[in-house]
Length: 279
Image 1 (tube, rainbow, N blue to C red):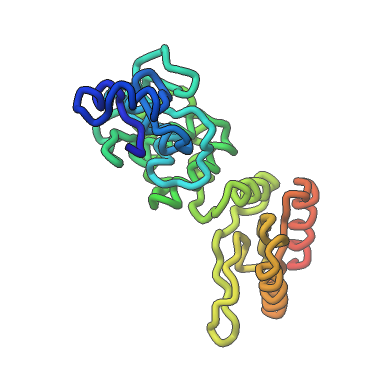
Image 2: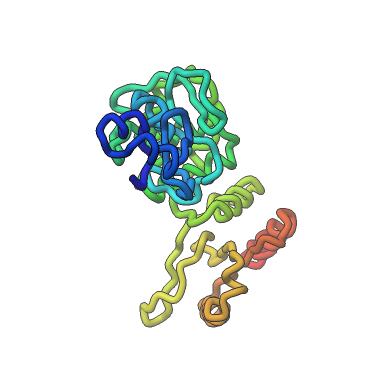
């Protein structure tokens, strides 16, 4: 029993004794148990919330994203589920929105909102930047497109949060490999630059792939990339980055590298300078 389970069912089926249930397992919700010391990630929380609903709810929002195997889902956030019970524990967030049969699928034995419905819920319920980052990750995991979400949104014209969703959904790009890449892409778009292409392959004169750029504008050979800490802390990565930068420079690319220490104004100034060099 490495996954959440309903304690009363397990006892009734003879899988565990009442004593073992109390001594070897821990209640995460009422009558929903986990083996002690189980890591509470987003998938475990989603499973436990669904069992708490006595399998009547539909896993949604962040929790649905986790079950669709999206990355970067906050393991500490409450599970989210469509279920008409307003007395949920603090670790479960419920809402009673209407959900159609074709907006539900089964994942790991649980009823879960489809990727398109999951994306629409996120776009309606979260601030634009946060929603775009979550939907980027969902789209990358599921091949979801903005068109899929826009088509579903036509059913929900009067839904609360739709104005925000109409801003967020067109900004989604599954090319983002991290929330910080999403942040960087949105930053340059909001500064007035054209939406950058993501994951741009660059080849040398022999047809050898030398780099895949986070984002940029291929027609003017300007790239913008976000470097996480591993680019500096890992010696091998650092060495490869030096060679990569030299190769890109030889091919005429301007590569604007961004780190956590950069300010938004500083990033925009550097991108503006790169564009100016192409005029």
